[in-house]
Image (tube, rainbow, N blue to C red; front, side):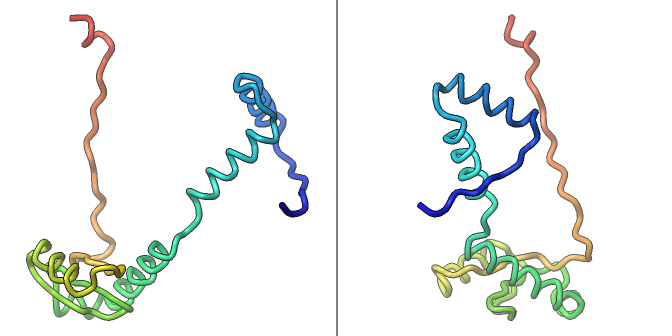
Length: 132
């Protein structure tokens, strides 16, 4: 392993780490290393995610033309170019999956920008519901 580094963290966070290490019966260094490894793994952008971001940027750049030609339809974007268009999302999906089986392709409906927000209703179970 490489050279060690010193990192300053707030005292409150250090105390939480200290308590966690005690509960787990392990070292503070192990808890910090484990937590940082998990966090960095979740934050890293993989090649597929970077490719999808590039395809989305291409969609944004082409948006005025896409609205003019394909408003309301689904477009498939690969390497910054429209490679398929369809009104049926599943039809375009199956064609793209057949043509580009292992590649990252953006399939997106052409709508006005900014895109509408998606609201997902949620619910919660109250403890008294279990008492019956």
